[in-house]
Image (tube, rainbow, N blue to C red; front, side):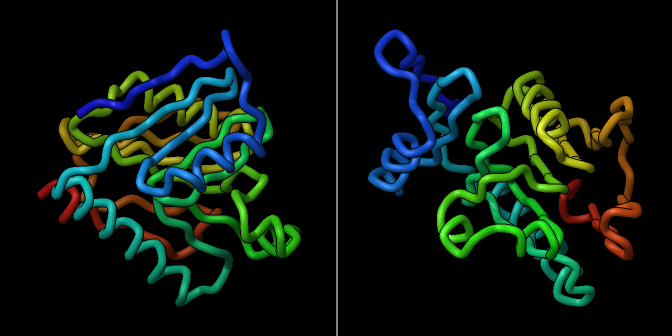
Length: 192
């Protein structure tokens, strides 16, 4: 199954409120909105992708519980990026300071900010080029560190603010660097 992109621009350019209403009225669908106004309907994940994603989110949350430096979000959280896109990374983290800068109302809806750290896990149906473009969009909107995990090729693409993309082949672990001190993602279950 592949994602479906609907170009609604000939009829309407969805704003945040309209997108939010559509997403809330269709809770069974995984939706995103591009900065250009295209509505993306994403298929559900398969068993292996869901298992891998759960392990990634678990490891990030376990680290965050220990160090309590921010908030962790799963793949169902949609963020309003500064460029107008509404995106949902597979896992995300926001520092406590950034999270606390939001009003209670902003915390209840789709948070109006770009996560400081994101992970995208390539599923069987994901286009690598599309995910790379999405990762660059996160970086262009204020993300400080991002990992694109491509388990098919056993590669991790590391995106850092203001730096060139780095590709690692078959790493067993990856570090959260200075942004997430002490966080090390164990990739054994991801590659397996």
